[in-house]
Amino acid sequence: MTLSHKLNVRWIVKEDDNTLSELAAQVLIDVLMNTARPVIGFATGGTPRKLYQHLVRKSQADQQLQRHWQDMIGFNEPSDRLEIETHVTHLSEGTRQANALYFQDGTVPLQAITMGMGSILHAKKIILLAFGSVKRQALLRAFSGTIDTRCPASFLQLHNNIIIFTDQIL
Image (cartoon, rainbow, N blue to C red; front, side, top):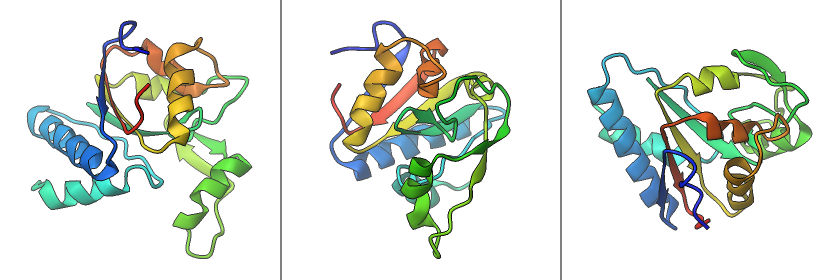
């Protein structure tokens, strides 16, 4: 199935997350080096961990870097309404469980600060990381379904310049 016919989306698919992370790091470094005033929204969680390691190793010195988890983008949880601006959001139990390993005592906050979809979509380029088998269905929902607040990542269909790094062939 090809989804890029609807959008200006460049899909980069590799089965090895280390290779994907290294490629994503190079794209991000190129953007940083060639953009007059780059803006980077750093993602959290396990998806971008190796990317950050590659960035630290490679870097010497107007982008969004997002991770895709389930139907979310950033911490924009499925909802009945769309949050446009950066805001405080209540984290679902599933999100809290998925992020528990990043907190030494296992105590995960009930809330997080996240960019709203309007802020994310305002970027000139979005670099999306979606590694792991659970991400395949989430990517399909985000890019082949209707745009819906119950799947905030589906709003990425409105953007015209996205690079998606994934280990899943869609």
